[in-house]
Image (cartoon, rainbow, N blue to C red):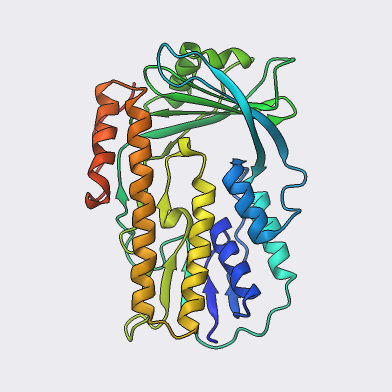
Length: 336
């Protein structure tokens, strides 16, 4: 079998590599990328099950454990607390552990030209114009919890402007996230305002000092699978957030990234077995588009039940249009 180039070291790329070497494929693994700081991830049921089924035990043994979630979704609704097992892990640490396990696996020499490249990044050429549905931003920072507060329960609350989520990280720290329906001129001030308007803010000693505003609208790669041709001697499979990005509210973004890795590995395996590559690439693209449309429908239903502002209506309209609309340039202004 021809080798496969794994052109990155994200969770999806490493998971695809792990599956491939387990099936006897030769891989060419990109050099380890320098760390980009901590990336806290909350992993719950489906993601934890998928991680265990693919990688086995041990990756999350020392991750901070959550046992419950408290949710208030929409005005006039009382909060409800229910059991939900979860683990909070630094995504960079998780990727490093995956790579260590992968590098310890005995693999044959991967010399020769690769037939496929698997990546979550753009490989050469102009940036890809993803289908991006909306303009919303995720505000994120960390803050200290008040003494004696529950450090095993994640909290999701809503205000008229957006949702707020608090995820305890252990040792008295908390990841604070909020979603607003457009660009934010003052992310720290806006997050402090949301916390003031939300009952969730009562568990914090103070709002985060430093806040990032991250584009967070769902997006889909228009062509995540390209067949090997004379012009493109190696096929290209885009995985992870480079292929499909979910709204962070769903809590399944990491699981979806891992599913793209599972599907990409299946494409490569089937190609090695003689299935036409063009048909496999069409199947890969169709599966991602179907998952994306289902996610958009879920987002539309959830946001319509909680937010009535004009800005949120624009986000709902974008989701209803689906991936037929390419990502439009962001307008002027945003959320004050």
